[in-house]
Length: 312
Picture 1: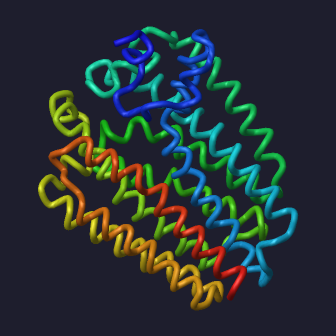
Picture 2: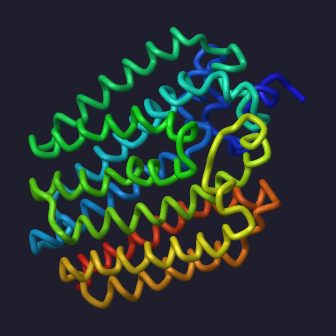
């Protein structure tokens, strides 16, 4: 096994562009989780949903040049701010990560990046994120700045509550509010329903993800819904996904999305049900694969909103 494989996190994808980066740069890209893009997708999709829903709330189709610009802008923003969040999380969790098999190879606990270097990267990423945020209206700018409170609190939740996945749900889906606000300059009931639905989606998929670490978490005293729900996790994840599907569907109908939206949403609901049926909480590999499958769940929800805009 070569040194590159030894340094790679256990849950990184088998091959990525990070592998071809210069050796000096590679640890910083790993710190940003660019070798694990699923987190960026899960941060990005709610932004897309919010953008589509905002267009529907303004009673127009999602085809203006501004819409395409926002899709690109939020994509870059998701990449940068996910990197910033992971960097901050790893600074706070460096001692915990060193005790967990799946995370001890990360750049900070492995010694590839010092805490000071990680803090410098965090500052740079936050400045880039600020530059992106300032492209939006002032209401959206204020809303985006408010999300930093959730980001700052997340690493500490697993120390004080059995529901850190709930805090992640509040944090990771803020883009649904931000995308809607970027389009409309306001929030409304439909977007609140969307945000609530995505909160339960995150509760489901991150409980699946947390089952990878439950043995290590128990040894070091880290809390999670995977440990709390235990063997009942499948039933609870089904409930989380059912509530998520219902609320996202209600959000679309609140903004007059129409039946094309509902038809494609059935595919997204079926994909969630498929995850639950395939779930094996005793298999870390199975949990990781199903967690990653939520990229496709998000794509189906985005397609549903696209159908609402283009064919509704």
